[in-house]
Amino acid sequence: MFTLIDLPYALTALEGVISAQTLSFHHGKHLQTYVNNLNKLLPGSPYEGLSLEEIVKKADGAIFNNAGQVLNHNLYFTQFKAPREGDTPSGPLAEQINRQFGSFEAFQEEFAAKGAGLFGSGWVWLSAQADGTLVITQETNAGNPLTKGLKPLLTFDVWEHAYYLDWQNRRPDYLKALWSLIDWNEVEKRYGR
Ligand code: MN
Image (cartoon, rainbow, N blue to C red; front, side, top):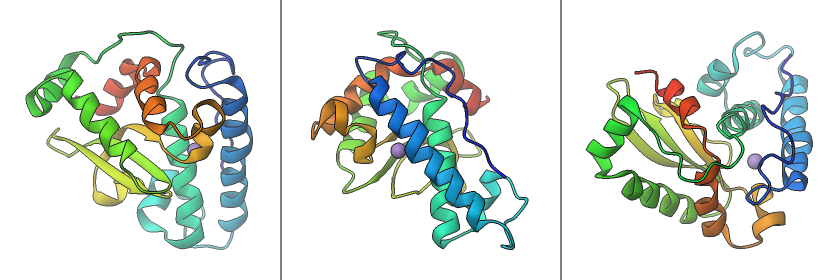
């Protein structure tokens, strides 16, 4: 049985970018529903007892959709901390970003453009290949780069439930504001190089 993750910050911690109301619905209602659905679907299926990551790699249909949404949201919510304007990556991740994109700003621009340009509901991801090369991908619905053999590092949720109460139709503004919330120590840990 999977359980709802605890948020590593208070509901009000991300105010100004993500309101307590959005966070409370997004975590307490949307994510809780995906957890509940997954727990209802797993018993008796070939995926019972597997880790979330293994289920996402192997399943399809409703089990994939709900497991993907649980994993995606777990990665999304645990990459934030209270707004700290101007925080940037360091170490091997920063070096790789500069090597491939030219600068952190150029990377941010490309990442946000891919999030803004994703049609409908989905996720924009920064992932790593086995050799450490970085890849930005758009995934629709519950998609996760694990299914492409990539290691997911950073993700922006572009389902409307993630931003509509705070930003209405202004998805590009929400994406731009999210940078101030990113806990780069966590993203660097996921990169693990
Ligand atoms: Mn969401």
